[in-house]
Image (cartoon, rainbow, N blue to C red; front, side, top):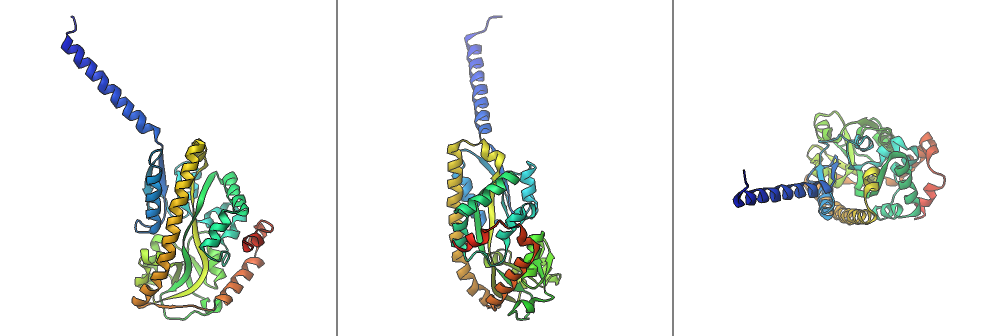
Amino acid sequence: MPITAQCRGILAASAMMIAATTATVAVAQDNPTLRFSAVFSEQDIRAEMMQRFEDAIADDFDMELHYGGTLFSQGSELVAIQRGNLEMSNVAPQDVANQIPAWSILTSAYLFRDAEHLVAFFNSEAGEEMKAMAEEQLGVHILGPTFFGTRHVGLVNDRRIETPEDMSGVRLRMPPGESWQFLGRALGANPTAMAYAEVYTGLQTGAIDGQDNPLPNVQNMRFYEVMDQIALTSHLVAFDLLMVSSSVWNDMTPEQQQEFQAAADEAIAWSTAEHQRNEQELADFFREQGLDLYTPDVDAFREYAQQLYLESSISDAWPEGMLERINNL
């Protein structure tokens, strides 16, 4: 049966629609999806950091942002990346140290003076060496350190803390992992492993006596509602590592890598500045909420912690001369 002009028109239109649909699918498939998992909440400054990063790379990548440990729990993100179950995360350096003992130097108390010192290290030759070590041994590419404040000790009672001796017997929540547990002992406390999402209830029920976190985290997670005091020990310039799977990184063109890194640098710099500004304001806020904020004998804490690290087997794995190189920056 001959095909009429009308039929030919319909067939042509159908072919065009199919071609357009196929082209649309092809375009959509060109953008890889990067799954990102982090323990921080959607209210966290770092969530806005990731939104800014997502917007900056939107032409080349689609992102799925998962917060609050809903996709992977705290401490499991690095392994998820290594197994190919996750493309990006904000990983604690303690998790890296669990697999690379040399990295434990970057988790030790009173190492970095402030956020500027932290950034200077990761931009230095020494920092590049540590990042290369992680890439070679773990299969992850570190984009940069995400500073989120200086860690202090918050407690649920009015027992004033002045020296590490005053921390004896205090059940201080620390994240799981030996690097974290050692840090708790370096403060003189009895460290208790507990997931981040469980800390509020732990403080509320008395399962733990305290926790250590930067002031912005205390606000985001509303820990101040169930705490009585914050001892400003300043024992750790807190940071995580924004990282991407090496396989994803290596699949990028050099131009994409440059743009990806630039987007990360800009988002991280914004987040760092916001955290620094926020810390200054939060001390007054917590006092208004009835918490006692005070500065203990920080020199006593520093001396006690550093001595414990240097006398332990942990420091045996530290790269030779790395401590001096960091101190000299």
